[in-house]
Image (cartoon, helix red, strand yellow):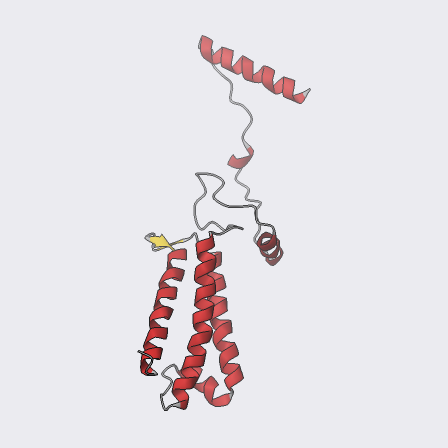
Length: 173
């Protein structure tokens, strides 16, 4: 019944437009209402991680960072690569320290002196937390120049260069 009413109203509006009659304004669209009902919570983040739905912006008028449930597979490659390089960097750092090198980062130096397991856990946790923040804001633009997701690829390349440097210090090149 409602569908028939909508069709009838649409036909009348079209006829009025064709005949040049004034067309009354229709009801306000839901998306134009000023109330923003979206909430970002930890539960919605977890639910969206396992059952992704939003793959892009809903409307052209949406501005600001867009939080999506789905990300391109290249982003997963960058994230896994960074985490693998982080673990390899921790291992190579400990090997270089054993051979007489010195840690420059004061936070990591303190952790190495106190407890090696704490050092490895903190290194992976800090890197992982940073990656999560970058992935959450992957579609935001940094200084209106480029998307934050591009930084993950820059970090991946920087970690690769660091690994090559450490392997060179160990004499593998």
